[in-house]
Image (tube, rainbow, N blue to C red; front, side, top):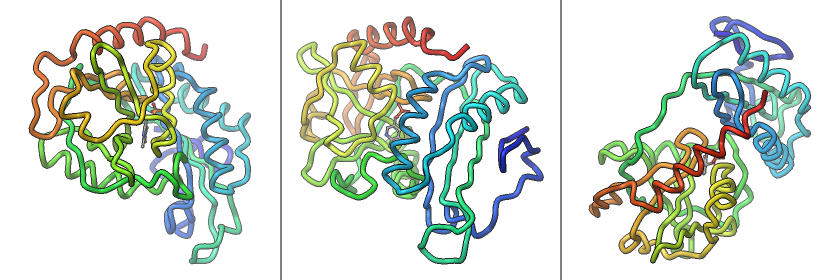
Length: 273
Ligand code: PLP
């Protein structure tokens, strides 16, 4: 497996990042996960826009997008696979231990992993921890994902594949790696970005393509929604058949199934050549 590091392709087994890289020691980094179909990245420009926004939010130097694009193409070409997850990581670089920015930054790492098509529906749980809708990192895709790791482990213990958070005022927010949609009386709703969720790229496309409305929703909407679905780069649109103890038989329901079809039909147009 070839990865991109220090400005060129390297063998994954021998590539080295400093043990003092601040992405490792203090989570001072950002990332993007990009789906790649037959070596073609999906919605790469949108991902790079978000990478730039995350860098700005974290106070990192602006990434060199020409290099990031070159790195993505090189890594995809070097590792052919039918369905891949391209992972772009960009950190503050390395320097003395501590929380100041690394002196030798930034580090750009692009790697590729294999991905598989997700099932049409899944189980989710809600967790008692809250997303902060007004924090310094709100809306940034940083490598500080430990809270998501803990929540996802809780979900797995309960036979679910995703954990959903409310925000500090009890509104439905997002999952550990996905955005959430509910269907109420035939209408699709999703929490607004102001709820503290990540501005998901799949979410934005789903809003655009299905006419979903951005609505503040209490967490307990999950107890009465007719249908629930998730969106993310690796899930696309995925129905939900259980939320905590509540079964949603027949998932994906008709509105979700239509959103899945629309997504599948239109997504092919956003693949880079
Ligand atoms: N919310 C969080 C916290 C995420 O980490 C992700 C993706 O990893 C998403 C939402 C979905 O975003 P996207 O559709 O851009 O993958």
